[in-house]
Length: 122
Image (tube, rainbow, N blue to C red; front, side, top):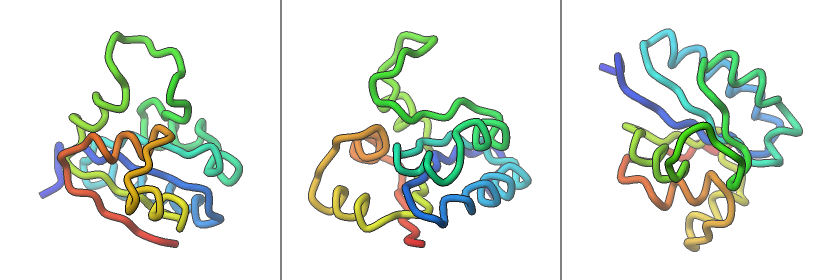
């Protein structure tokens, strides 16, 4: 059912961020292509290098970072997603999404996607 699908995983700043490694590994085991967007706070709990290694895809943290291709990255990820999963979803990201605040890479991508969004608090 998930084979060949793409999940964009949003990881936010909670001690539960370490569980993203297991989430990615399980999704990969099921044949899912996983891209990761981390908030800056999430990088204090788990490194982008760890999630890049497990997902086998680039990990995005900065909204205005230089990219290797000529696309608007949050739009490209939003269009690529069959599902957006935010795990762990802190109160901060839940509040942003509930109030239409798009001030980082994760919140802007969620606002731009047409894919279903699953929010999983820690």
